[in-house]
Image (cartoon, rainbow over all chains, first blue to last red; front, side, top):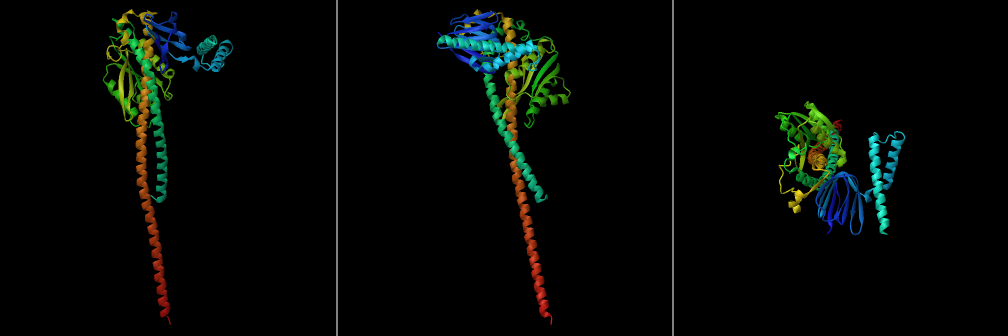
Length: 142
Length: 309
């Protein structure tokens, strides 16, 4: 029995489909959801959602939110979510190195303050992490 | 009557003007569509968030479950988020929503303060010496959620800090291209009792299992996450609806302006043609008269010449 998985952010539907497993970054730890999971409402941390179907694995970055788990359904209300395929790797790399430079050395003038640079670093690291996981899973399949 | 030259200039300037209004009309029409699409894109999240909210908030004693759900006993201060446009040329769009808000809160016993979204509304409020605690102007067209979520956070913070006991939205609902209605809606404290059960029931298929839900970390924490986001989303949707209404109002206003301009051009052109014809006729008369006079004097001279010995 597949699970109906929906990932929605405030301004769009990010993903919708029937899947075999969903791995969620819950606030209290990562949880893997298989069919017939008992109903749970959980808050989500900043992290990566893995959606596994019989043919592929999809990765999504998520910046927090809430997930509702039902035996045959997972609904994720995300604050900004994106599919790994939408991520611009070059841009993420660039953002990461800029943020690191800003934090280690001098003010680059790009970020308003240290918090902004730290947030950018966190975002870009997460994006790159998602890309690497996606690549690894592709290699594994071959 | 104005001279032909003056009239020609006037026709030309009206023609230019009607080109501008026609362009604005076309642009507005496409912007309406864009805003409408953006509104539609928010509905999946809104519906699902509302389901989760209802599920949690309907539990007994929900009012004490979260401060954003709790109706306050003593209400002194009200915050109104007023949505208008940054630019004019939109008919009575801005006036309508501002007037509706002012009338609605005129006889309110509470102190009213405003958050102005849009330059026109801010200016109108300031002119009437109303209290404006924040101003969000020059929003991008069809903003993304991140662009405007700060408005929601501000409203939630002001409410939670106790400075305001109620938060209202004043915006313009998009009914259709010709019809937009100003609307006042309470967004905080969030009222979960008033809603039609049939439309937004939490998961119809598992209705009986509601109670077996487990919560991580806890109900209050989940509400903490979801209510502010839902408030911000409501504001986001209202902004998009207002923008759709603004552009629809502008489109209609510009259509009227274009129609009026072409009417004016027809009338002026007729008058100009008449004047032109008149002057040609006058010239012809002059020439004919001159020729006549010449002919007469010639024949007179001939007669005189003949009669001389």
